[in-house]
Image 1 (cartoon, rainbow, N blue to C red):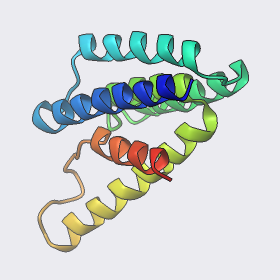
Image 2 (cartoon, helix red, strand yellow):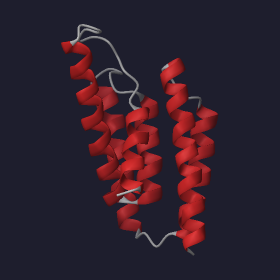
Image 3 (cartoon, rainbow, N blue to C red):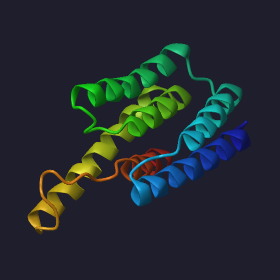
Image 4 (cartoon, one colour):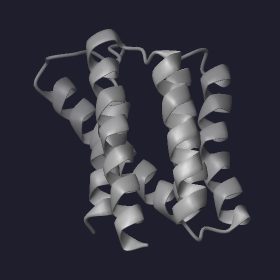
Length: 143
């Protein structure tokens, strides 16, 4: 069973790395990549994990919250960000996605403050969020 969990962690990490790369390069994530990750992560997590349905729904709700904030903020938060957090939340459960999201938000805030302090960007500049989600994922994985 541990071997299956390890394989799913590697697959999820590679998927997040690909999404991060696309987010950095194009500031968008292709729907095919999101769909492939959704199918792979959700199927794999149901086959390997013992996460309760309530934890999955709570994890999914954090991604849905980002999608709602996307609409409220008129696109300041990316739709892809909300979809990816939803997929990871449903696949890994609430506890994991809460920490991943917290690490990602903290990392992006520190990065943004650094850009502003060193006059590399202004308040209106957008930065890709999925690379910080990926780093948060690594932080949770290796904690």
